[in-house]
Image 1 (spheres, rainbow, N blue to C red):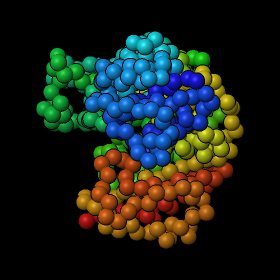
Image 2 (image 1 turned 30 degrees about the vertical axis):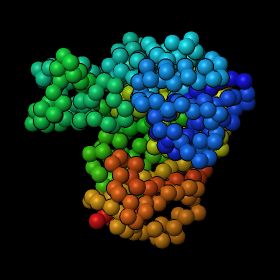
Image 3 (image 1 turned 90 degrees about the vertical axis):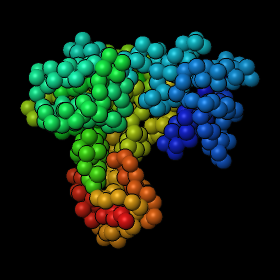
Length: 404
């Protein structure tokens, strides 16, 4: 019986899907280290759980894993899916002598400066960047690359705490807020322009065995800056032709260059106006924004199980045919407060209800969400990519979320 330790701070639905996938593997005793333990049916999938005061602390996690090891024996794997956990988890693995991503590899993925250094050393195209330890360094960087630039913490995840800076006045305001110093490092990046996509992989045995591509409409940073935009992600049915050849070459090489042995990666990349591709950043974790679910729907495959097989068994059960295009629209609107009304649902149901495979609609009375995923979403699927794209346009034009 293999002791698999799954770590997470809080029992979020998307996080628990991966725990359920681990539970379904053969010969597994599923153990948990949580800051807040799951309840009900989600608690029942675990053979044992310990709680810790800070699930992002390597020392606290070490104590939690040690307590489980005293009860059940040494861990076989120590796993988690959140980006903030990857360095602490790698440290704990090293302390227990458990296979998996090492601290050096985890830091290379987590620290965006180290990441881009490694990508450039491998000859891969990515945004120019600099580590800022003073306001002067920021002005020097802008002098070199011009506006706009992006400022973010070196270990940021997604668009959290990210600034797009378009002018000297905006840079002055941003520097006043983030105050880079020798003790407060900030990463500056060239702002990449072009059509923004993501590139997902599943790696086993150090080799990317599965790849997938998504397209963002528009990019997440623009969505964060414009709270009324209803964000759309589309997975085109065909991603194997010449249009995506450069993305596949860059994406596979990036995973290898950064040293991942097993697991999922999520890379954001841009097709520049001249047709070339460039990497935004890459994370050693499953993607958010329901992309794992969307990818499974595109292939009629269980991607959560595929992740579990890769990180526990170092195995891959594919390949799978990409049978469908899939799209998701995240529903939100202008304003603040709580959801007062959701308009256009009946029209949308009549127009495209036959394409919808899953939905979670905004609920009247719910508070406005902080992120770009809004208060609800709808997923459509069809063998024709253009049908899915048209349905996405119809959906965001017809459905309006009002707040009060």
